[in-house]
Length: 136
Image 1: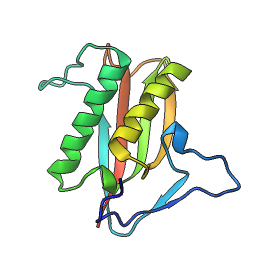
Image 2: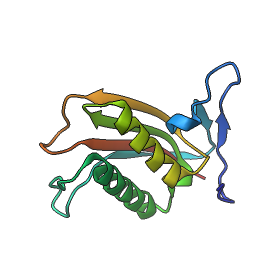
Image 3: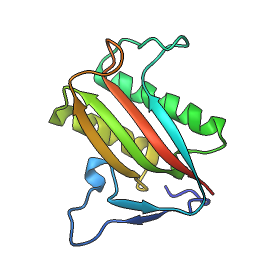
Image 4: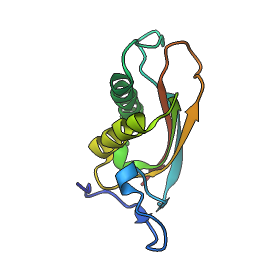
C-alpha cells in the first residue's frame, strides 16, 4: 500500500532491529516544506475528551489527525515523524497502537517516538499523537 505520490525515503538499516512490527521506521527523508501538526486526541467538537477505551481513543485520535492533514491537502503518506503519548503504557497498548499504525500507514511507517506518560493535558485522555508532515 504505497501511494503513487509518496516521495519519502524510508531507511531501516540492516544492522538495527526491524522496527516495522512495532509500527515505525528508523528514519524517513523527504523533500519539500515541513508541516507541524499539534497533538490530536479523541475529542468532541468542543475539544473535550471523548470517553472510551484505549483502542477507541487511538482510532478517534487518528481520525482527527487525518482531518488536520486533509485540511492542508496532505495525507498519512506525507507524515515523516510521529510522536505518540500513551497513558500507563504497557505491551497490550503497544500492540493496539501497532495495529492502528499499520491500518493508517500500511508498510510506509513514519519515524516514531512513543512516550509513556502518567497523564495528558485533560482528564480522561489516554492517547495523543502529534506529527511532522512534508508537503511535496
